[in-house]
Length: 345
Image (tube, rainbow, N blue to C red; front, side, top):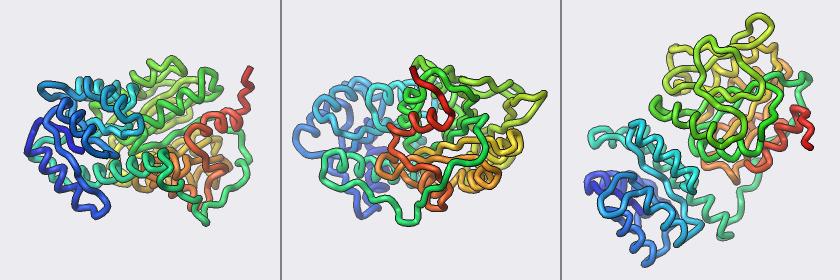
């Protein structure tokens, strides 16, 4: 179902989705109240839900939709503003499955928006079906062999994520708790308007402190540093420690920030003492960097296909046999703590 007060946007999104033969738009609604009525009339797997609408806005409708169908997957469509980003990420903490930066009417035909929209709808529909028991979880890829721990004890945790990443990050940060003995760097593919808000929401979880990385800032153990939108986050060695560096070098893998330059710089700065955690995401950003980590003696783990919205980035490193473990999202945090030799009391 598409819920948006603009008939132009509803029509454009419907045409994009129905270009995929496996997706069918079964309802269109102009506000949250109409969406609730539609949900009562027919089975719906995924809702693309606008935030700002008359009669009933998206944030008001969200808990009502989830109460009516707890397995419903809701994608919040947010404008590229600070307020829109804050509401979208607040919605994720309230149960929305994902968000989608909403382009202008002129930009909505952009092919990258269409690809992201279809990937999220397909992935979330698959997760709903698996949760309802109507489809089996995907079998692990036959070529995804695991490998022993790297020979070097990690001095840095590096996380890469993209499509479906914010919701996965909320769960991972909670699973890691407050006592990480190394610094944590994170690259999430996300617009510049959204990254400071994501850092704020991760920080508000009350576990490890999280901030958007600043150029030249020392890296402290137990702190999470998020790559700012439109800047690569690099790691540099200085005076026996580590610090952040921000770069405006060209995009890699069509992304800035990109996971690969973060990992490449981390290998150089730590002499390979890196633990990579690759989360849900489209594409293969991070594959080349993870290969460098493994060749230098580091370790990598990845989110499994069954719990990923899109098994692109984690699937790439898993199928290249670079991973020590390929695990459901809920088991990634405990595995990281085990590798870092954190003693839980």
